Length: 492
Image (cartoon, rainbow, N blue to C red; front, side, top):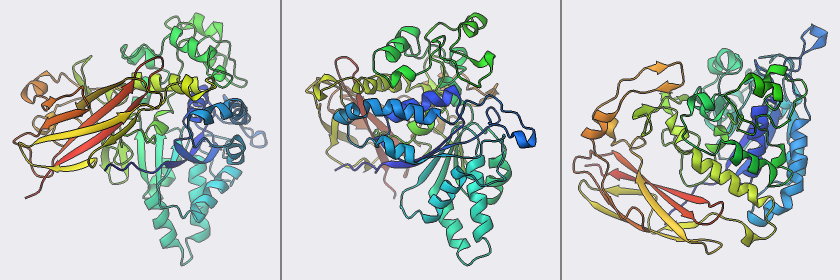
């Protein structure tokens, strides 16, 4: 039978932008799915608290209290969330693990802080066999200071080699844009720590979404988001939208996207439209929703799909074919999921206000008759059967599809598209010839509980086919459960 991975565990580092605030709010709704080990406030090139003793003025600094303000709102809906799912952390637990890191200036990592000492001590004592993902929504400076402290204190001891190796094997940095120089100048130069670096795909779920998103989802519109903010309780009321009157103390006037003046000066936006959640892909990647994208950055899922630059660096220039533009594009590895991501968000928002389990949607329970990994022969007809039930007895719908780009047997295996990086956001060229020369894998019963997959005759030993199963329920705010089945051609 299938076996799903254990929860991921994480430390969140954030610099307190409105973008981070929205991501943190959503994270609280998903915090039952991830073991949250720490929350650390940092600086970045865009936000820092300043140091008046050194003559450094604050820059776009939104303060130190907003994390606890959001946890206060989470506490108001906590008991309700627990009706609908197990595993939500107690509000006091979240307050306990919140620490202030290096916030005085961009890239400042000279002094030890409560945040850096927390990360340092956690890494020093960590005996959990799971990977530790340090989400980097701002700068890496506090993480860098923690690593530097460990180096300074232990590099001349007999313990150092083993300690350093354990940290390097266990820590993964998921970086949303390089927001200071401490990763390149210190971490990359001194540590062999795995990094997943989203350099530009996140913009399609961030401030530039309206310029680059190409109408891939209607769930960023005014009506959709107004409903989200106003009808799902006190936590969602904190969700920031364009022109909603939300003014952040310390932020520059021209960055106050909640103000009327911002709308007047940026006429392409409408009141109550989506602002940004550019940091959310870093925890989307960790959600154990059945897509298994945390097993390998090249698999792809809600957090995007990544290619290996070296054994320690994965970047988001993996390409998926976008049917809207008929191009292979890196951003489509993220945007192909946006409707599901937003529908899931609103369904969880309903958990904040639905007083009974039966008054909200819940994830279909899915079980496969065989392993998620199967060995196959060329030309074999592979039948895979799913058994599913809905916790609320809603009707269920099934959809199986072949994730070509994640498979090693793909169009790119026969004809590699040449492409150019256009302004850092759009990668691709017309893929029509690629698709024509390499038809989709044949599936029978793609909308039923049992699918038959025809393995290509020319598949080579070791090549893979990634099949995605989606099981969704009906009614208002439906939810979807995924499974990824990987078929691998037998060797020899």
